[in-house]
Length: 131
Image (cartoon, rainbow, N blue to C red; front, side):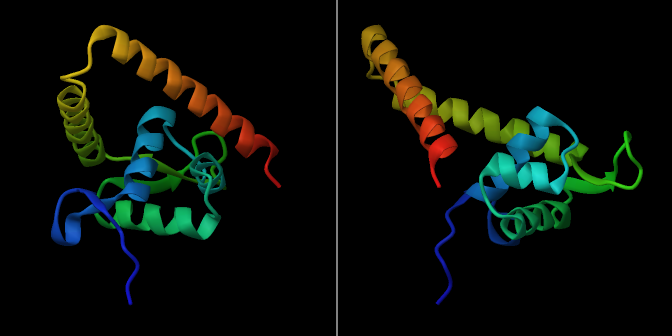
């Protein structure tokens, strides 16, 4: 039985799952990243990060290249196509959030933002102290 993998962008063989989208986000926001750094940032083991990157590379959304700082080190970088796909994903996210928040008044939105900030702070604290 194959594991459930929700697809969040695209369809068929080109569909990206949440882990791949998270990896794409990191490449956009952090530039060239070593695999170990990517795995740490995604909070997954190296093999999981490698699978996500392999899928992005196969789709032409990322590529492996030598580090500009140290030619012995391989890093992952986003491609032009990857940037285009990411822009489309961001637009989809914005549209979804706007649709979801349509019925929220300004106070509801402020309350939600505060609660989410507290939640993320608690999650970060938990991850930092978890065994």
